[in-house]
Amino acid sequence: MTSSTAVPEPGPNAADRTHVAAGGDVDVIAIAPDPEVAAGIIEDTPLEDIFDEGVVARAQDLIARYPVSRSALLPMLHLVQSVQGYVSQEGIAFCAKQLDLSDAEVSAVATFYTMYKRKPCGEHLVSVCTNTLCAAMGGDAIYKKLQTHLGSEEKPLGHNETAGTPNEPGSITLEHAECLAACDLAPVIQVNYEYFDNQTEDKAVALVDALQAGKRPAPTRGAPLTNFKGAELQLAGFFPEDERQYRADVDGPSQAVETLRGAKLAQDRGWVAPVASDVPLPALPSKEGEKK
Ligand code: FES
Image (cartoon, rainbow, N blue to C red; front, top):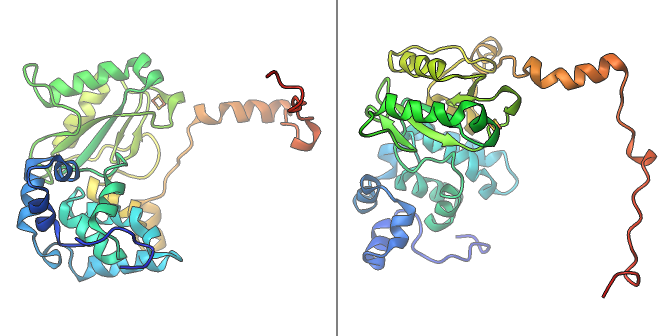
């Protein structure tokens, strides 16, 4: 351990001891809330059986990109998701081992961000924006529709649940998401973080039907559709070296006409924003002048 790491043992691969020490305590369950995952804690599968030399080389590549190794944790968590389709207990131990951190430190980060999945994901991750604007424009109805379409009327698919067997072709994990930063194109859906804009219930059903049938519908903009693991590898920062392949796999138009409409209007009319030095700052009351 580095001197900056305050958390003592147990470190990587000590999850079984951690679990035993905690007894039935919910702390460990907070790290691995799913029973399948909790079982994995006790089994402690050897890391090299899951993360082979190629993955270790990529992890080392990530570490070399940062002046401080622990800065590579976020992309490394995406890297482990590109292997297993989620951040397993083994994935946490792998990151901890590579970065000389404790399992607890890695878990604290992995459980904070919603992009790190705690249960095995489907071949595709379908995220429906149900934040305010999308919800008002039909996002809530789309989410409800997909819940019953991918599940059933009696047992709608829940948030972060998977229709089909995780990692198997055609399987889909459904989630409702906070604002996906495309409010001008509401309601929006993302598949493996690629945008499908201006959705309706019917369009959304057709989209998931196509995914379940093994098709890869073209997103409204952005890169061509891959699968969840493929997207995770890109999010980790690994792209095709061949320029043409890169352009084909990763690149794509990312701006929508709607998004640029305000800028275009300003350009056509010659509107410019004043430079900051032209704008006097409002006077602030002096401390003496403040009301007691
Ligand atoms: S509210 Fe849905 S993208 Fe912003």
